[in-house]
Amino acid sequence: MFFPDVFAVDGNTVEVGFRILPGFYLYKDKISVRAASDGVMAGQLELPEGKLKTDEFFGESEVFYDAVVGRLAIARGTPEPVSIDLEIAYQGCADAGLCYTPQTVILSVDLPRATASGASTATDMPAPMLSEQGRMGQIISMAPIWIVVAMAFGWGLLLTLTPCVLPMLPILTSIIAGEGEEATPLRGFGLALSYVMGMAIVYTAAGVVAVAAGAQVQAAFNQPWVLSLFAALFVVLALAMFGAFDLQMPSAIQSRIAGISGDQKRGTVVGAFIMGALSSLIVTACVAPALVGALAVMAQTGDYLRGGIALFSMSLGMGAPLLLVGAAQG
Image 1 (tube, rainbow, N blue to C red):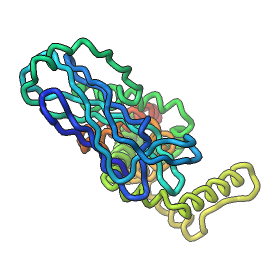
Image 2: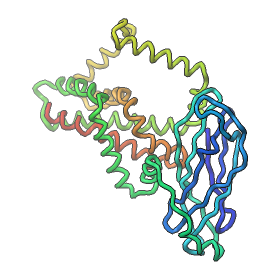
Image 3: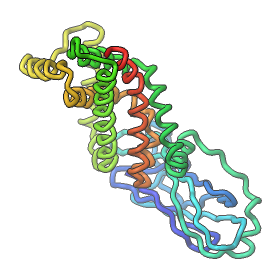
Image 4: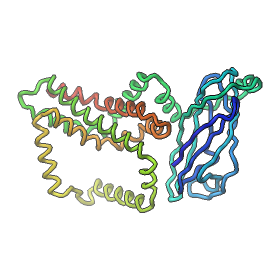
């Protein structure tokens, strides 16, 4: 929906622009830019006048449709050519009625040699505060890869404290129990590892694919009839949870799943992998909010490798307790 970019005008000035898909708009007062590199300060972003719009989220505001370009003064500690990183924050909505959460992206730009006056004012401007989402995105996009892996793994461990992981325990236990007397701690650990890898690989692939098609998918989900359909679905699920009625899959599907489940209980590595892949659907609701930083970096900077590694590492963190359960059950 919103595609930021940055261009160097000269050694002390850059242009920050946004391409905006039809049916979407950006709030002028939600756009900000700060320098994310040492020895560099960014001034106030100068934007043109926007179009006045009244919506249900922020009342009357200046907004931009289609495209917008603003200028930004850069103060540097050295006049030499340099590549700098800029953190760009923004927020927008859809005419259909969906408003997005604030987004942050870090983009790089190569500056030519600066003038002496521009280089001498590098300490004159105060440094803006870096948002929580901005810090997460900066870590994923700029930190050494081992830090990304360690932090994502830690986030996954924290997610094991949520109820979303609990349904996986009886599934994994039943798979290992299918081994009967042949089950050993090593065998149980191997089955658990296969189960966790199925969950991690499928979820990582799904996240990368979803972000790769993010603009098309999110545009489709902004349609009023799609939003209404999902709202009705959540109401039905809520009523079922409170016991208003029993919500079950058709008997034919239940029989098919029971057959697949029976095969997996025999304790095969492939079966455990398949069940782990299917179980990844259970944790989607809990994992998606925690991965907003990784998804933002993947969508806005195109760094699918780092984002994918973060997704995979978080999935492994979520599966770490399952490995202990597998070894104990063996």
